[in-house]
Image 1 (cartoon, one colour):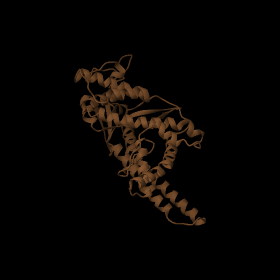
Image 2 (cartoon, one colour):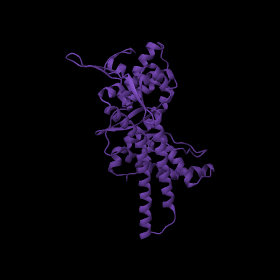
Image 3 (tube, one colour):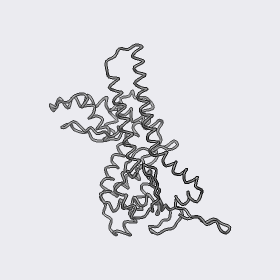
Image 4 (cartoon, helix red, strand yellow):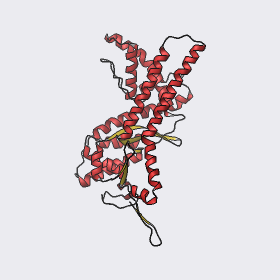
Length: 344
Protein backbone atom coordinates (compact mmCIF):
# COMPACT_ATOMS: atom_id res chain seq x y z
CA UNK A 1 0.00 0.00 0.00
CA UNK A 2 1.16 3.51 -0.78
CA UNK A 3 -1.83 5.79 -0.30
CA UNK A 4 -2.63 9.39 0.48
CA UNK A 5 -5.13 10.71 2.98
CA UNK A 6 -8.32 9.42 1.36
CA UNK A 7 -7.01 5.87 0.87
CA UNK A 8 -5.44 5.76 4.33
CA UNK A 9 -8.66 6.97 5.97
CA UNK A 10 -10.72 4.48 3.96
CA UNK A 11 -8.44 1.51 4.76
CA UNK A 12 -8.35 2.16 8.50
CA UNK A 13 -12.08 2.94 8.70
CA UNK A 14 -12.76 -0.35 6.88
CA UNK A 15 -10.52 -2.18 9.36
CA UNK A 16 -12.73 -0.84 12.16
CA UNK A 17 -15.75 -2.45 10.48
CA UNK A 18 -13.98 -5.83 10.22
CA UNK A 19 -12.93 -5.53 13.86
CA UNK A 20 -16.50 -4.79 14.98
CA UNK A 21 -17.94 -7.74 13.07
CA UNK A 22 -15.33 -10.43 13.68
CA UNK A 23 -13.60 -9.44 16.93
CA UNK A 24 -15.53 -7.16 19.28
CA UNK A 25 -18.32 -4.60 19.10
CA UNK A 26 -16.31 -2.26 21.31
CA UNK A 27 -13.21 -0.86 19.67
CA UNK A 28 -10.79 0.74 22.10
CA UNK A 29 -7.56 1.27 20.17
CA UNK A 30 -5.12 3.82 21.53
CA UNK A 31 -4.57 6.68 19.09
CA UNK A 32 -6.84 5.41 16.29
CA UNK A 33 -9.33 8.27 16.26
CA UNK A 34 -6.50 10.80 16.52
CA UNK A 35 -4.66 9.13 13.62
CA UNK A 36 -7.78 9.13 11.42
CA UNK A 37 -8.49 12.78 12.20
CA UNK A 38 -4.96 13.93 11.40
CA UNK A 39 -4.76 11.74 8.27
CA UNK A 40 -7.97 13.29 6.95
CA UNK A 41 -6.77 16.82 7.69
CA UNK A 42 -3.03 16.68 6.96
CA UNK A 43 -2.58 14.12 4.16
CA UNK A 44 -4.18 16.17 1.39
CA UNK A 45 -2.41 16.94 -1.93
CA UNK A 46 -0.47 20.21 -2.14
CA UNK A 47 1.60 21.99 -4.77
CA UNK A 48 5.22 23.07 -4.55
CA UNK A 49 7.47 24.64 -7.18
CA UNK A 50 10.40 22.27 -6.94
CA UNK A 51 11.46 18.79 -5.85
CA UNK A 52 10.85 17.88 -2.20
CA UNK A 53 14.38 16.51 -1.82
CA UNK A 54 15.90 19.83 -2.94
CA UNK A 55 13.77 21.75 -0.46
CA UNK A 56 14.61 19.38 2.40
CA UNK A 57 18.33 19.74 1.63
CA UNK A 58 18.01 23.54 1.77
CA UNK A 59 15.96 23.34 4.97
CA UNK A 60 18.67 21.24 6.57
CA UNK A 61 21.43 23.64 5.50
CA UNK A 62 19.54 26.55 7.05
CA UNK A 63 18.70 24.57 10.17
CA UNK A 64 22.32 23.56 10.65
CA UNK A 65 23.45 27.14 10.10
CA UNK A 66 21.57 28.55 13.09
CA UNK A 67 21.54 25.45 15.34
CA UNK A 68 25.33 25.02 15.34
CA UNK A 69 25.92 28.26 17.24
CA UNK A 70 22.93 27.67 19.53
CA UNK A 71 24.25 24.24 20.51
CA UNK A 72 27.79 25.53 21.11
CA UNK A 73 26.38 28.17 23.45
CA UNK A 74 24.19 25.64 25.27
CA UNK A 75 27.11 23.21 25.67
CA UNK A 76 29.21 25.98 27.18
CA UNK A 77 26.46 26.96 29.62
CA UNK A 78 26.00 23.34 30.74
CA UNK A 79 29.69 22.52 30.87
CA UNK A 80 29.33 19.67 28.35
CA UNK A 81 32.33 18.76 26.22
CA UNK A 82 31.68 17.96 22.55
CA UNK A 83 33.55 18.23 19.26
CA UNK A 84 32.28 19.97 16.15
CA UNK A 85 31.69 16.52 14.69
CA UNK A 86 29.54 15.60 17.70
CA UNK A 87 27.50 18.77 17.16
CA UNK A 88 27.08 17.95 13.49
CA UNK A 89 25.75 14.47 14.35
CA UNK A 90 23.40 15.96 16.94
CA UNK A 91 21.99 18.43 14.40
CA UNK A 92 21.38 15.60 11.93
CA UNK A 93 19.60 13.65 14.67
CA UNK A 94 17.33 16.62 15.44
CA UNK A 95 16.57 17.17 11.75
CA UNK A 96 15.74 13.47 11.30
CA UNK A 97 13.12 13.77 14.05
CA UNK A 98 11.41 16.39 11.88
CA UNK A 99 11.87 14.31 8.74
CA UNK A 100 13.87 16.80 6.68
CA UNK A 101 17.02 14.73 7.12
CA UNK A 102 17.33 10.97 6.63
CA UNK A 103 17.27 8.83 9.76
CA UNK A 104 20.77 7.84 10.88
CA UNK A 105 22.33 5.62 13.52
CA UNK A 106 23.93 8.44 15.51
CA UNK A 107 22.05 9.72 18.53
CA UNK A 108 22.00 13.07 20.35
CA UNK A 109 24.60 14.57 22.68
CA UNK A 110 23.78 13.42 26.20
CA UNK A 111 22.43 16.22 28.40
CA UNK A 112 21.48 18.48 25.48
CA UNK A 113 17.86 19.55 25.09
CA UNK A 114 15.95 18.61 21.92
CA UNK A 115 13.89 21.58 20.66
CA UNK A 116 10.12 21.29 20.25
CA UNK A 117 8.76 20.59 16.76
CA UNK A 118 7.35 24.11 16.49
CA UNK A 119 6.92 25.00 12.82
CA UNK A 120 6.57 28.75 13.36
CA UNK A 121 9.56 28.96 15.70
CA UNK A 122 11.82 26.91 13.42
CA UNK A 123 10.66 28.80 10.33
CA UNK A 124 11.34 32.13 12.03
CA UNK A 125 14.99 31.12 12.43
CA UNK A 126 15.38 29.42 9.05
CA UNK A 127 13.69 32.16 7.03
CA UNK A 128 16.44 34.75 7.29
CA UNK A 129 15.24 36.76 4.29
CA UNK A 130 17.92 35.57 1.86
CA UNK A 131 16.60 32.09 1.14
CA UNK A 132 15.42 32.88 -2.38
CA UNK A 133 11.96 32.84 -3.94
CA UNK A 134 11.95 29.07 -4.54
CA UNK A 135 12.52 28.27 -0.89
CA UNK A 136 10.21 31.04 0.30
CA UNK A 137 7.28 29.68 -1.73
CA UNK A 138 7.58 26.01 -0.80
CA UNK A 139 9.87 25.39 2.16
CA UNK A 140 7.46 26.20 4.98
CA UNK A 141 4.89 23.79 3.50
CA UNK A 142 7.49 21.02 3.30
CA UNK A 143 8.63 21.80 6.87
CA UNK A 144 5.03 21.58 8.14
CA UNK A 145 4.35 18.34 6.27
CA UNK A 146 7.65 16.84 7.44
CA UNK A 147 6.71 17.44 11.06
CA UNK A 148 3.19 16.12 10.38
CA UNK A 149 4.67 12.89 9.01
CA UNK A 150 6.72 12.22 12.15
CA UNK A 151 3.63 12.89 14.28
CA UNK A 152 1.56 10.42 12.22
CA UNK A 153 4.28 7.75 12.43
CA UNK A 154 4.46 8.11 16.22
CA UNK A 155 0.68 7.79 16.63
CA UNK A 156 0.60 4.82 14.23
CA UNK A 157 3.10 2.95 16.41
CA UNK A 158 0.58 3.18 19.25
CA UNK A 159 -2.32 2.12 17.01
CA UNK A 160 -0.49 -0.98 15.80
CA UNK A 161 0.28 -2.17 19.32
CA UNK A 162 -3.10 -3.82 18.81
CA UNK A 163 -1.89 -6.55 16.44
CA UNK A 164 -5.44 -7.77 15.82
CA UNK A 165 -6.42 -4.39 14.38
CA UNK A 166 -3.21 -4.31 12.33
CA UNK A 167 -4.20 -7.69 10.85
CA UNK A 168 -7.44 -6.19 9.50
CA UNK A 169 -5.65 -3.11 8.13
CA UNK A 170 -3.25 -5.41 6.24
CA UNK A 171 -6.17 -7.53 4.96
CA UNK A 172 -8.09 -4.53 3.59
CA UNK A 173 -4.94 -2.92 2.13
CA UNK A 174 -4.12 -6.17 0.30
CA UNK A 175 -7.60 -7.11 -0.92
CA UNK A 176 -9.60 -3.89 -1.13
CA UNK A 177 -12.69 -5.91 -0.14
CA UNK A 178 -14.65 -3.11 1.56
CA UNK A 179 -13.31 -0.52 -0.88
CA UNK A 180 -14.74 -2.38 -3.88
CA UNK A 181 -17.83 -4.05 -2.40
CA UNK A 182 -18.93 -1.89 0.53
CA UNK A 183 -19.11 -5.06 2.61
CA UNK A 184 -16.80 -6.90 5.03
CA UNK A 185 -17.74 -10.42 3.88
CA UNK A 186 -14.61 -12.58 3.74
CA UNK A 187 -15.97 -14.92 1.07
CA UNK A 188 -16.69 -12.33 -1.62
CA UNK A 189 -16.12 -13.34 -5.25
CA UNK A 190 -16.30 -9.79 -6.62
CA UNK A 191 -13.91 -9.36 -9.55
CA UNK A 192 -12.06 -6.21 -8.35
CA UNK A 193 -11.15 -7.82 -5.00
CA UNK A 194 -7.62 -9.27 -4.91
CA UNK A 195 -7.37 -12.84 -3.60
CA UNK A 196 -3.94 -13.98 -4.83
CA UNK A 197 -0.41 -12.69 -4.38
CA UNK A 198 2.80 -13.69 -6.18
CA UNK A 199 5.76 -13.99 -3.80
CA UNK A 200 9.19 -13.77 -5.47
CA UNK A 201 12.23 -15.22 -3.69
CA UNK A 202 15.83 -14.05 -4.11
CA UNK A 203 16.54 -17.13 -6.23
CA UNK A 204 13.83 -16.13 -8.68
CA UNK A 205 11.34 -18.81 -7.57
CA UNK A 206 7.73 -17.72 -7.36
CA UNK A 207 4.91 -18.94 -5.16
CA UNK A 208 1.29 -17.87 -5.57
CA UNK A 209 -0.47 -17.57 -2.22
CA UNK A 210 -4.09 -16.97 -1.26
CA UNK A 211 -4.81 -13.63 0.38
CA UNK A 212 -7.05 -14.52 3.26
CA UNK A 213 -7.26 -13.56 6.92
CA UNK A 214 -4.69 -16.23 7.85
CA UNK A 215 -2.26 -14.70 5.36
CA UNK A 216 -2.92 -11.21 6.78
CA UNK A 217 -2.40 -12.39 10.37
CA UNK A 218 0.86 -14.13 9.50
CA UNK A 219 2.27 -11.22 7.51
CA UNK A 220 1.05 -8.34 9.70
CA UNK A 221 4.10 -8.76 11.94
CA UNK A 222 6.39 -8.39 8.90
CA UNK A 223 4.74 -5.18 7.73
CA UNK A 224 6.61 -1.95 8.37
CA UNK A 225 5.03 1.46 7.94
CA UNK A 226 6.22 4.95 7.12
CA UNK A 227 4.61 8.27 6.25
CA UNK A 228 6.54 10.15 3.59
CA UNK A 229 6.19 12.38 0.54
CA UNK A 230 4.71 11.02 -2.67
CA UNK A 231 4.66 13.04 -5.89
CA UNK A 232 2.37 12.52 -8.84
CA UNK A 233 1.90 14.82 -11.84
CA UNK A 234 2.07 18.33 -10.39
CA UNK A 235 0.93 17.59 -6.84
CA UNK A 236 2.59 16.12 -3.76
CA UNK A 237 1.03 14.48 -0.73
CA UNK A 238 1.96 12.64 2.43
CA UNK A 239 1.44 8.92 1.83
CA UNK A 240 1.25 5.96 4.17
CA UNK A 241 3.48 3.14 2.92
CA UNK A 242 3.04 -0.41 4.17
CA UNK A 243 5.71 -2.89 3.11
CA UNK A 244 6.44 -6.53 3.87
CA UNK A 245 10.12 -6.78 4.74
CA UNK A 246 11.53 -9.79 3.01
CA UNK A 247 13.99 -10.18 0.12
CA UNK A 248 13.46 -6.81 -1.56
CA UNK A 249 13.73 -4.85 1.68
CA UNK A 250 16.94 -6.66 2.61
CA UNK A 251 18.44 -5.89 -0.78
CA UNK A 252 17.44 -2.22 -0.47
CA UNK A 253 19.04 -1.96 2.97
CA UNK A 254 22.24 -3.45 1.62
CA UNK A 255 22.14 -1.04 -1.34
CA UNK A 256 21.74 1.98 0.97
CA UNK A 257 24.51 0.84 3.33
CA UNK A 258 26.98 0.26 0.51
CA UNK A 259 26.25 3.61 -1.14
CA UNK A 260 26.79 5.35 2.22
CA UNK A 261 30.10 3.52 2.59
CA UNK A 262 31.27 4.65 -0.88
CA UNK A 263 30.35 8.27 -0.22
CA UNK A 264 32.08 8.18 3.20
CA UNK A 265 35.28 6.84 1.64
CA UNK A 266 35.12 9.58 -0.99
CA UNK A 267 34.80 12.23 1.74
CA UNK A 268 37.99 10.90 3.34
CA UNK A 269 39.83 11.31 0.04
CA UNK A 270 38.48 14.83 -0.44
CA UNK A 271 39.48 15.86 3.08
CA UNK A 272 43.11 14.86 2.61
CA UNK A 273 45.50 17.78 2.19
CA UNK A 274 46.15 18.75 -1.43
CA UNK A 275 46.96 21.89 -3.39
CA UNK A 276 44.77 23.28 -6.09
CA UNK A 277 46.14 22.89 -9.62
CA UNK A 278 46.12 20.48 -12.52
CA UNK A 279 46.78 17.44 -10.32
CA UNK A 280 44.05 18.52 -7.93
CA UNK A 281 41.53 18.57 -10.77
CA UNK A 282 42.64 15.09 -11.84
CA UNK A 283 42.26 13.85 -8.25
CA UNK A 284 38.82 15.41 -7.92
CA UNK A 285 37.74 13.80 -11.18
CA UNK A 286 38.99 10.39 -10.02
CA UNK A 287 37.09 10.67 -6.72
CA UNK A 288 33.81 11.37 -8.47
CA UNK A 289 34.42 8.64 -11.05
CA UNK A 290 35.00 6.21 -8.17
CA UNK A 291 31.70 7.24 -6.56
CA UNK A 292 29.80 6.91 -9.84
CA UNK A 293 31.30 3.53 -10.73
CA UNK A 294 30.64 2.10 -7.26
CA UNK A 295 27.03 3.25 -7.12
CA UNK A 296 26.37 2.08 -10.69
CA UNK A 297 27.67 -1.42 -9.84
CA UNK A 298 25.50 -1.59 -6.71
CA UNK A 299 22.37 -0.63 -8.63
CA UNK A 300 23.21 -3.20 -11.29
CA UNK A 301 23.55 -5.88 -8.60
CA UNK A 302 20.17 -4.94 -7.09
CA UNK A 303 18.57 -5.10 -10.53
CA UNK A 304 20.04 -8.56 -11.20
CA UNK A 305 19.13 -9.95 -7.76
CA UNK A 306 15.55 -8.75 -7.62
CA UNK A 307 13.99 -7.13 -10.68
CA UNK A 308 15.58 -9.21 -13.45
CA UNK A 309 14.80 -12.51 -11.75
CA UNK A 310 11.14 -11.55 -11.52
CA UNK A 311 10.91 -10.66 -15.22
CA UNK A 312 12.86 -13.77 -16.26
CA UNK A 313 10.36 -15.94 -14.42
CA UNK A 314 7.45 -14.26 -16.17
CA UNK A 315 9.19 -14.56 -19.55
CA UNK A 316 9.89 -18.25 -18.92
CA UNK A 317 6.22 -18.89 -18.19
CA UNK A 318 5.11 -16.85 -21.20
CA UNK A 319 7.27 -19.02 -23.49
CA UNK A 320 5.44 -22.11 -22.22
CA UNK A 321 2.22 -20.59 -23.46
CA UNK A 322 -0.75 -18.62 -22.28
CA UNK A 323 -2.03 -21.51 -20.16
CA UNK A 324 1.16 -21.66 -18.07
CA UNK A 325 1.17 -17.91 -17.51
CA UNK A 326 -2.51 -17.89 -16.54
CA UNK A 327 -1.98 -20.84 -14.21
CA UNK A 328 0.89 -18.99 -12.53
CA UNK A 329 -1.41 -16.07 -11.75
CA UNK A 330 -4.20 -18.41 -10.66
CA UNK A 331 -6.43 -17.51 -13.60
CA UNK A 332 -8.85 -19.93 -15.19
CA UNK A 333 -10.75 -19.15 -18.37
CA UNK A 334 -13.75 -20.72 -20.06
CA UNK A 335 -13.64 -20.05 -23.80
CA UNK A 336 -16.81 -22.00 -24.61
CA UNK A 337 -19.92 -20.31 -25.88
CA UNK A 338 -20.16 -16.73 -27.11
CA UNK A 339 -18.44 -15.14 -24.12
CA UNK A 340 -15.25 -15.62 -22.11
CA UNK A 341 -15.51 -16.20 -18.36
CA UNK A 342 -12.38 -15.43 -16.37
CA UNK A 343 -11.93 -16.12 -12.64
CA UNK A 344 -9.12 -15.88 -10.08
